[in-house]
Length: 235
Length: 287
Image 1 (cartoon, chains in turn yellow, cyan):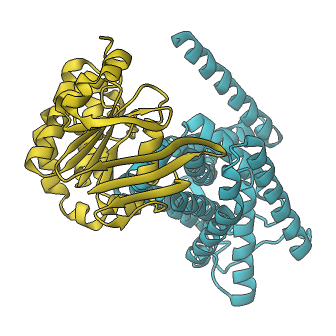
Image 2: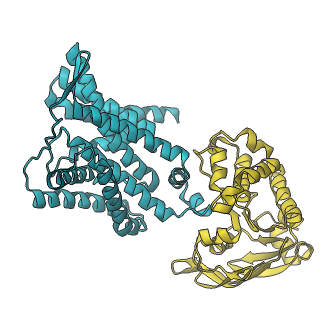
Image 3: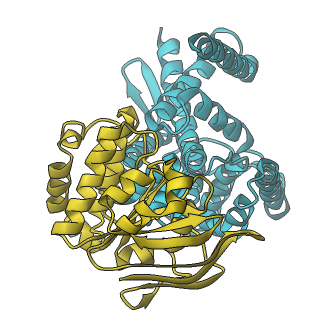
């Protein structure tokens, strides 16, 4: 479904990503693992069109997305839950979710998708009329995930969903992600620092260090890998 | 008593203009975080546009409001696209300061070159029509202007609150990164916003021509007052800007009535400074 090859990207003359290669298949949860500053968010920005890659290709179901704008990539079906949530804090929860419907198709399906989103996160229905900024961190993350679901993703990118949240909320959110992968055939690209949590729900993963992929394998292989154990799991 | 009521009504009306100017400035500031220092000059351009439409094509000043709105919107959109958007990339406040101040100078001096320093007025058949509302007498042009102002302000408020595009404008003003994430074309929203802001200023100018003289620097005092309205009414708040504008208009006429018309500018700006200081102190205490 998603096939990234030879991807280079950076800011100005500073190159951050070096020949990135990875792949996400239909219905799969793939984890991109790495510590702070490894280039994970830059990768997300390059894949979603927020940053123009300097070279390389981003193939999505045979369509070349590299160099396309964010709207085109959303229409293609790649929707992200950005790092830091990026909500519209003075707008209500419902208005935030409305903004997730970016094209005619998702606007037409809004009612149904909203019901579905409230099904995943009942708390949001109670808070629908509240300004998003007044919600707790966990609830805000739910809004961000729900906003992405309203956009009917075929590939959902979760950028650091665990950042600053209580463990049980992270579990809830990751559970929604794996349910979606199982039932709706959505693929998930899970970008995480918390490697234990990520590998617990992912099918496979890639480890990124200094903007380069240094390892990849199934979740089991990675959690048993000596380098991963030493560098990330502290074992 | 009737003088007092008369002053109230006049203040309310002038306040309506400050509100309209302030709302335009507020929308622009809210979305792009820039101060449009040529906002007053845009009002002046709207005045001359109305004057030209009246003198050469015989179009009534009130009928020219929609024409002025459209022309000024396009003018603003063009300026945004060709001048402001490229400068936004530099993230330099001084660049944008010089750009909008320079644009203002260009416009007012351009008007001086084209129209000279003559003070023009538009005399319509109904200019001298007065309407008696109890103890208050009001010139018909002022009454119509106030009605149009209220309608436009409410329409702007409803547009931002309920329409998809209005929500997108608010989204960009609250979180441009989030807006990009959900596929909003931030640059088009900038163009739209600046167009709307400039159109509001132009419409204010057009409505003013019914009872105000037209000259190259006519916009300056309105431009300054628009800034006060934005700061007093609260950044990004349309109802706040509306109320602040009305307050400012009332304050001015009260000063003119009870003290002296020549002090009204002085008192307005002193009040502004006092409000700023008091608010800053309150904010500092809360921390």
